[in-house]
Length: 92
Image 1 (cartoon, rainbow, N blue to C red):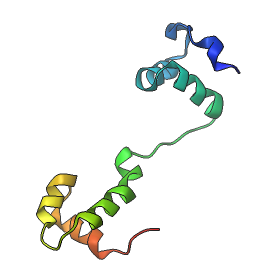
Image 2 (image 1 turned 45 degrees about the horizontal axis):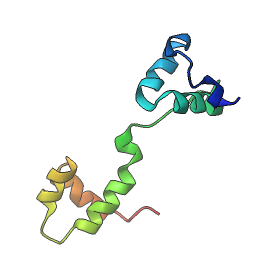
Image 3 (image 1 turned 90 degrees about the horizontal axis):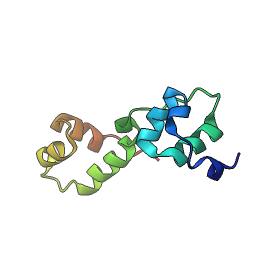
Image 4 (image 1 turned 30 degrees about the vertical axis):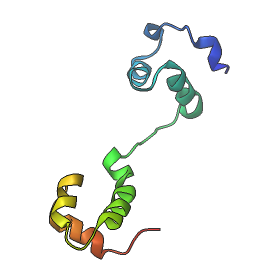
């Protein structure tokens, strides 16, 4: 499907689920997602889960031996959770 030919498509012609996606990512991206994943069940984990490895890597890099509470505030998690992250082996 040539997505370019639908660039002037009124959003009201799309099913409601597409309208929700268009509101978040725009028409062109919504049509591309539909073309790629249409007919499939697509599960997206919560963004916090998806970004956890990145967050934990940053926490390890920013830890200076004394700033557990500061990191907890910055990343909106408890000092106890910061210590667990620092004590756990780094994921590859």
